Amino acid sequence: MSLAEIAALVGGRVAGDARVSVSAPAVLDSRHGEPGGLFVAMAGEHVDGHDYADRTRATAVLGSRATALPTVVVDDVPAALQTLAAHSVARLRERLTVLAVTGSQGKTSTKDLLSAVFSSAGATVATHGSYNNELGVPLTMLRADARTRFLALEMGARHIGDIAHLTGLVAPDVAIVLNVGQAHIGEFGSRAAIARTKGELVQGLAPGGTAILNADDPRVVAMRALTDGPVLTFGRARHADVRVQDLVLDRLGRATFTLRASGASARVALPVAGAHQALNAAAAAAAGLAAGVPLLTSAVALSTASLSRWRMELRTLPCGATLLDDTYNANPDSTRAALDALAAVAGRRRIAVLGSMLELGADSEAEHRAVGAYAAARADLVAVIGETARPAADAAGERAVAFTDNRAAVAWLSGIVTGGDVVLVKASRGARLDEVAAALG
Image (cartoon, rainbow, N blue to C red):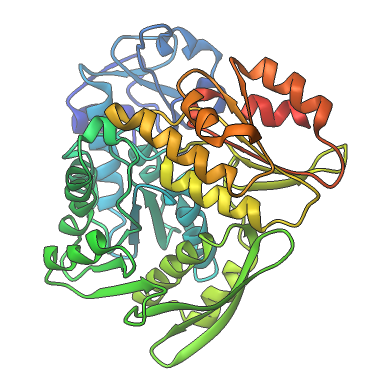
């Protein structure tokens, strides 16, 4: 599209050459701009993207004021980006199958598994990392082109109505709801409010679209009532349409299991740690079935899948210890799952390094205490970082060591971690425990 066409679509004006054409993806980070691409300049509290327009390789800018490059100037940059993305995908809709996934935890891992499954069946565009909000979803949509057969979107929320807004941009053909947990409960106020928000994905299905629901989570199964269309369930429950059976873990905590669906079965050997990943894989396989991907094809793809950075990343440290880097985010449910994975990995000692779980509201102290007690039952040592997480150390008792900051924790860990140890590092993104994992090697 030319800048003149984009401006007409989004209700803006062009500062510069209106004949310039955009033919490459849109980006928020000026460093990632490509020739032919669109740099989306946001004016933030501390940084103004417009000031970086002369440093990007992108060809044009979408912003709220003129820049050094030809610019589509609008009053509301996010709204214009969303309008452009909705228009772009609508032009491709006849040949494009849209998949969307949400849940309190496991969204990004499941999106990565969806990408593996659908890439085996056709050209697939999937969300990068956790770009799952009102900016990330349209940026992903704008990466789809005429060659794309499948578009896999991760959809997150911090408020009631957020997912409804995203499905208003593009109604999914397949909607996957993984679980209703405690992530962002401080923002939502209750699990009921979280369930209502996750249910917006089912309500936002395209006509005839299929809902993929977790048979093991009563709040998710209840979302069956939100659609008149087809529903497939997944899980370990007997009544699940895609069922996980015969699960075993290897010495690195990686799951091998059987998926059964409609009389067919296939064995899956996941290359990522954690028994909980089997349910994410079952969700991806169920989505595959809804879109015509055979179960065996999905099983083969899942057995070679990889996850985004900082999601149960398994690596060997220079000292010979094994590191589980799960530092992208944390809530009580995902932290328990990570601790279960730690307990399943063979090693001399198991060391849990835990930071703050944020956005838990009034439940924060109690939830940190509960996680601390859970960690003490699964780890030989529990290193707790930060004042918010301190109740976890109190609950873990004699097994725990508390630190005020990441630097102090790294100094201690560097002195005690040796070959044969297994170390889990886990916290909410704001705690920056990826710095701890990186410092360990």
